[in-house]
Amino acid sequence: MTQRPIAAIILAAGKGTRMKSDLHKVLHPIAGQPMLLHLLDSVAALPPERTVVVTGAGREQVEAAVAPIGASTALQAEQKGTGHAVLQAREALDGFAGDVLILYGDVPLVSAATMQRMIDRLRAPDAPAVVVLGFRPDDTAAYGRVIADDTGRILKMVEHKDASPEERAERLCNSGLMAARSDRLFALLDQVGCANAAGEYYLVDIVNIAAAEGLASAVIETAAWEVAGVNSRAELAAVDGYWQADRRSRAMAEGATLIAPETVWFAYDTQIGRDVVIEPNVFFGPGVQIADGATIHAFSHITGATIGAGAEVGPFARLRPGSVLGEKAKVGNFVEMKKTVLGAGAKASHLTYLGDTVVGPGANIGAGTITCNYDGYFKYKTEIGAGAFIGSNSALVAPVSIGAGAIVGAGSVITGDVEADALAIARAKQEARPGWATRFRAAMTAKRRA
Image 1: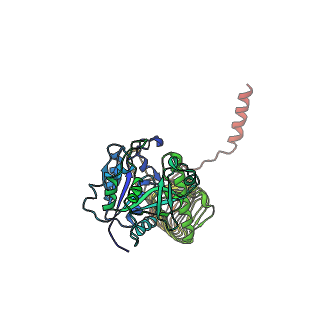
Image 2: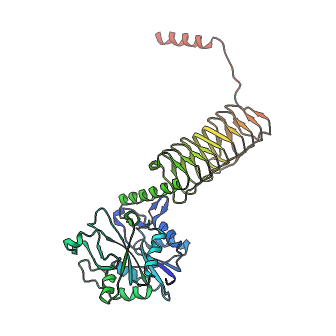
Image 3: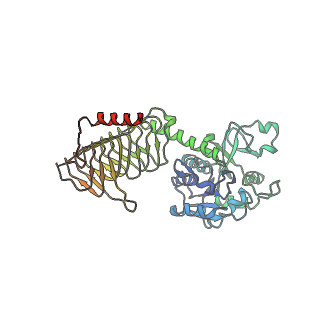
């Protein structure tokens, strides 16, 4: 099999009017990452020698999104069809001699493995002119048909509206994704015309043009969900659902237990160790790492956090970016953490806010404790030493340091540092007045009757 360099052309020039959004269609997120970047991540795994994103309306947004990863862009100033869009990448591929993948920015789930299968088929001994990625949708009415023989050699490609009843009975459809050698691709595109009802240059025409020149093309198949496109908010939700279903299956295959898989929502970069247990209704935002043996209880919301081996989170916990749980640390129900390190074996079991805080190993944070880290202008740090005990309903006014082994009495408002192994109590002295309540009730009853 011939080995040639690979290039990718990604079409992202569509206006996406059905999204009804100021955000470019291909930048709408799936699992917390713009769909275009999902696709570019898969492309990068090949890896390509060149990647060109064809832009149009909203080009500034797309260019800004792809610039950090080094992809080139080409402008399709006028929307004249998919064939015309691919032609706009010719200059960016000047001097390139290899295999070209043609992909769509709004078809984000196609995997690197499927892309590689397309390239492998293109490099096969029979050297097809074009490789088409086909699929079999439940509803074929919106798609052109691929008429092929038993070997996958394409005999004809036809749009649904132009197909005969026999051709419409064929369920193999064209996803629009293709692969071709660079020299053949642009030579074929130069022959594509626009004598059709839409007056557009259709990419699919290169297959029939190649056939007229005696060059055979081939089709390979993939699952319908992998080539699902996004043109509306409803389709965005459906594609996100496909991605989530695949990620849940992978998590379980890699050794995690999901009690109710369909209720767990992962981000594109969630990392999960072995023997992790995730209970129902858990949401992961970007930047989460979970070590082996951790347990995430129900209804927890976690973003940008690192969770150590054997740690527990929730139920009903919220971990915000910068949260770090050490080995066997515990965050319980209705606890919120932000930019806080909870040392190994430390506990914040319930009803607590910890912000900009470092908690030492084995410390215990009582119910209702808060770190007062913001004065309306600046954020300040709280440090709690190893083995310290913070009584319930305490407020630690940052910047403040609680020494190792210190105890803070329940209900205290701590505004100054507490040395190691000391007891700190900061609350008004309790006062009792015997009989006062009886006299009060009698006086108020008399007043009401008056």
